[in-house]
Image 1 (cartoon, rainbow, N blue to C red):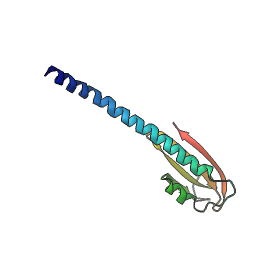
Image 2: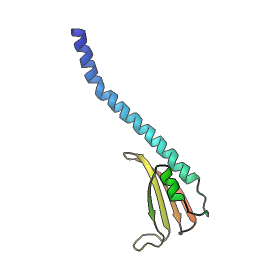
Image 3: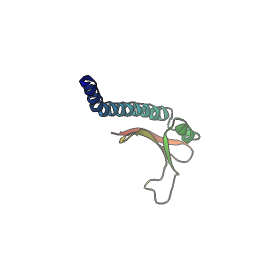
Image 4: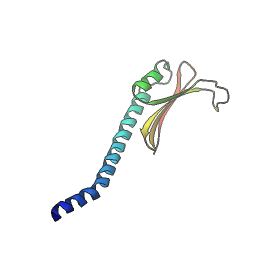
Length: 113
C-alpha cells in the first residue's frame, strides 16, 4: 500500500514538469518551423521580380500576412509592404518585402526573440 502511495505522489509531482517540458519542446519546434517557412518565402523572392502571387504563397506556407499598398495616406513610407510572420509566443520570424505595387524593391528577414 505504501508503495502505491509513493508512486501516486511521484506521478503528481512529475506531471507539471512533464507538461512544461512538452510545452517547451512544442515551442522550440514551432519556432524552428516558423523560421524555415519565413526564410523559404524571403529566399524565393528576388529584387526586381513581380510581386504577383507573393501574398498567396505566404498564406500557402501558413504564415500570417499583412499588406500595405504603396502611397497609402498617413503611412510613414511611400513604398508598399508585404509582411509575413510566424512564431511562438514572443519568438517571431518576419519577412518584409518592399514593393512599388508591381515589383519587389527590397526584402529582408528579421526575428523578435
